[in-house]
Amino acid sequence: MIDYQKEFKLIPNYINKLKEVDQNITIKLEQSNSRFIQIFICPSTAKNAFKFCRKFIAIDITFLKTVYKQNLLLAATKDSDNNLLLIA
Image 1 (cartoon, rainbow, N blue to C red):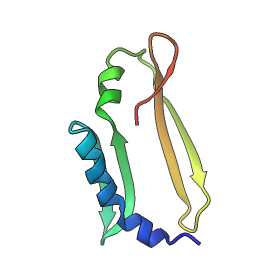
Image 2: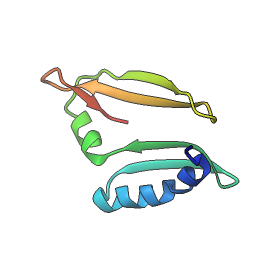
Image 3: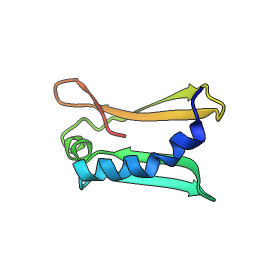
Image 4: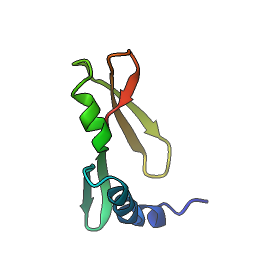
């Protein structure tokens, strides 16, 4: 059985590791009373590549069936070669 509370407490460590690898990454973590609410992650490579993509953004959501009933929201676009690029 997964200990979700323990896993959520690891998010700040995960954020620090991401920032070590990508100093220009955009990360927004929202918490309330030390409880996880939501997180936004956009790597700097995705931000830079988006400047050269088509002016189109596709949003997709999936529902995660855990005890917390979470949603995973993704944003993607298409580059000049018609390939999908995950931007957030």
